[in-house]
Length: 100
Image (tube, rainbow, N blue to C red; front, side, top):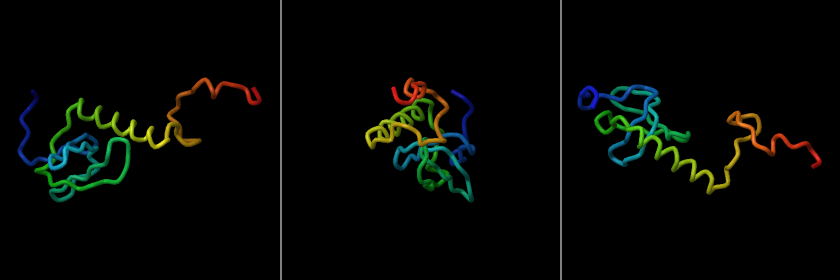
């Protein structure tokens, strides 16, 4: 394992952390006066967590949270990114000529 972290120390901004009260994973958006602000990995509403209730997330926890949110979005029918804000990938349908 890595270096031992100080109990109650906040994970660094931009990293992923687990809210130990709920086991939810979020990206650390900010740390203000003993409070960590987390946002779900694929976006959404931020929530606050006391520094003592936030711990660094493992790579497996981050991946699991991202997959769960992607699956949830797919079930809700959000399979493609909105026009102009795509992921940069091209599908076969994007290459077809109009009218075919």
